[in-house]
Length: 166
Image (cartoon, rainbow, N blue to C red):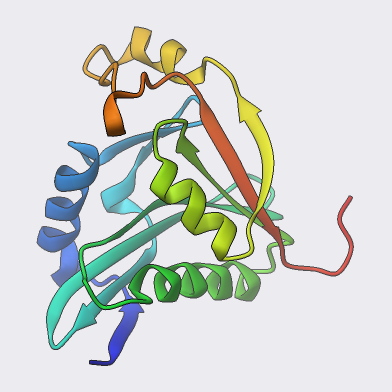
């Protein structure tokens, strides 16, 4: 079963919004204390056998030297779907001239933490208590997540797209 990855088009909007509701309960995504309208961001969708299989969205930071992966999800049982989406995001950032691509996940998401490390991403920072601060702005942010772990922090992962890091 080949995985097909392509840029998000306006025809994908319903599936993109459904995926965001399923995994994040909203199209409004918070990362590093910033709000993103994920259904309005560039990105890629995955299809397996013609069926929607996953999503990645990105946001260019001001100045354009780095790009943040805002969402990444895969509902496919086909191994490699998430990796293919992450690879497409990295290629996009490289084509846009970014030197660095980064993403965050919450401290409870141990599955994602393992995945990013297997993909060769490096741990860059711990943003201690940032989810607690966002919760004061968005009271609906859950207190507990995967495996009953209290959600408090964001862990930042990165990949440098050039040979030298600052």
